[in-house]
Image 1 (cartoon, rainbow, N blue to C red):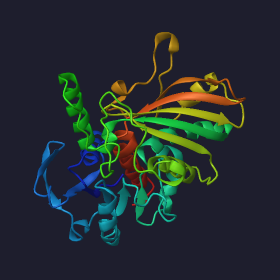
Image 2 (image 1 turned 60 degrees about the horizontal axis):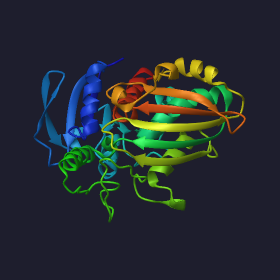
Image 3 (image 1 turned 120 degrees about the vertical axis):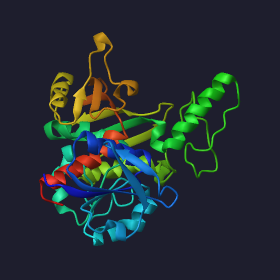
Image 4 (image 1 turned 135 degrees about the vertical axis):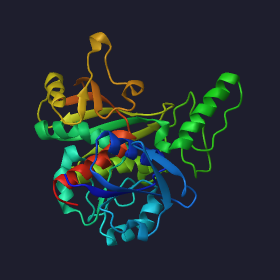
Length: 344
């Protein structure tokens, strides 16, 4: 693969830092690296692969000569700078929801629909973290047996709300143990009129409520899955829940297939699926758990068993590090494939 001039917008944030780590880990072919941020973080210095880089304030001029620009600074920032980046000739890989459902922007999980990269017009969107984890497991099942419907409940880590969500869980846990009142200002939604403690609690709301009393996070999972599978009628019912875990999202997935697929066949199928690792031995109490999946690349699946209430039903338990595969790793894999296919 040819060496590329790479920029990261939002380099000092959680996903930006993870992007830098993964680019180094995977030895991504970088010719020059440009780190950008808001004016507030500009001037800070970041160590990348043993070399120190200065972070500069985002500007139109900063995108000149850039081949790939990773955007990880929030939807409004992406909308502000995407035109300048594309006009400068960069391929933007955006990690926000800003462009995911636009018809002219490919939504990509490389293991699912990597060929769509060739259709980009300067922007490629990274799906929602929970959607990536879901479709990585569904795609092999869909290809083998077809899918009638999916019911998914997510159990999402506080890191999905950023560093402030993680800080609030730490602080509330300390306050709970010390017998102090729990103060909340972040969850379920920072801008909402009410906030609830997450320590020793479960909050059945992620993002704002929307159509038919589903949250925006739930609708993201539905609509993005339909777009990824090129099927606007693909049936997904989602419930998204925040739990007091620092990192890694978990999902309970119920799948009704068109053709019969036994748990044994499903297990074997997923063992061969790219980016998926099966951890499933009930007799030995082996199954995926967030504590043991943190910092790892695969999407882990276990508890594969029949749904005894329908003819062709399966239940699965899935865990993935949403900061890695659910965000930064998927973005880097898109860039790697774009480079390999000559799409950048």
